[in-house]
Image (cartoon, rainbow, N blue to C red; front, side, top):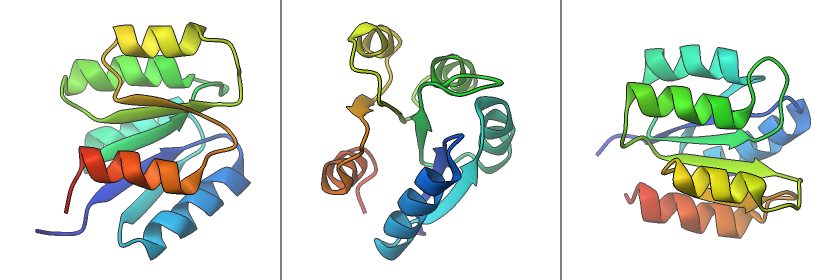
Length: 121
């Protein structure tokens, strides 16, 4: 099977870089986007295997991105991440059939485990 593609979406360039470097080293092809609007365009063009998106971003937040991706592909795998500690985003994502919600700072090993469960080799 070919290399799996992951779309990382975050308005903080350092987070995109860190996740991209880590996931590339783990054998994934990674593309990044700085906001939900650009990510949606990338998603429609590349159809990545999984999307990892920040929840709170300008232009289009992660929840709106999730809803738009699900309109395009109901079975799309999306992981939302946020430094926000309240449970509202978690509840919203579970109700919207997002794959997972993780807190920042991201535990890279936990993230890799989630990815491997959703898109096995």
